[in-house]
Image 1 (cartoon, rainbow, N blue to C red):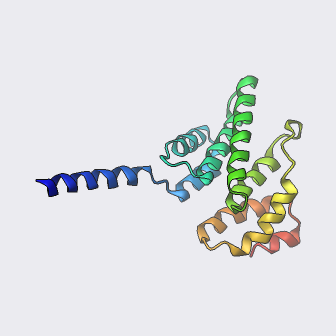
Image 2: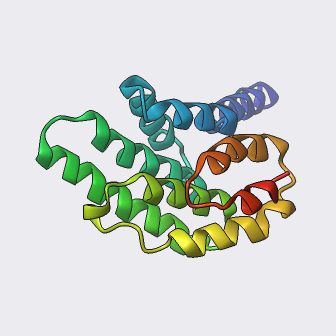
Image 3: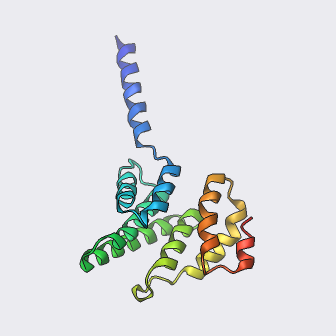
Length: 166
C-alpha cells in the first residue's frame, strides 16, 4: 500500500514538474512572431508567466512580450503601461544575470526597435559589444540560429561585425 501511494505521489510530482518546463525553442518562435502578431505576443506573455520558477531568462522573454504588446494596443495609456512594465522587468532580469547573452540580445533588439522619444536606447552599444564578444562562445546552435538573422538585419552592426557572426 505504501509503495502504491509513493508511486502515485512521485508520478504526480514528476507530471507537475514536467508541465512547468518551458520549451525555449517555442518561446523564441513566439518572440519572433510577437512583433507582428498580437496572439503570439499574448501567448508569449502567458507561457512566460506560467512558469513555476521564473528564471531571469524567462523573465526577460515575459518582459519582451510586454514591450511588444505596447505595439498592439491602441490606447496610449495602455501602450505606456506595457512599455514601462516591460522595461522594468527586462532591466531586472539583466541585473540578475548580466552575462546572459540572450538577455542582452533581447534588450538590444528592444532598444534598437523602440521609438527614440521613449528614451530607452542607453545600452545599445554596450549590448552590441557584449553580443559580438560573446557570440563565438555560444554552444547552443538553436540560439545562434535564432540570433543571427536579427543581428544581420540590424542597422546598428557594420558589415564587418555582421561577418563576425559566421
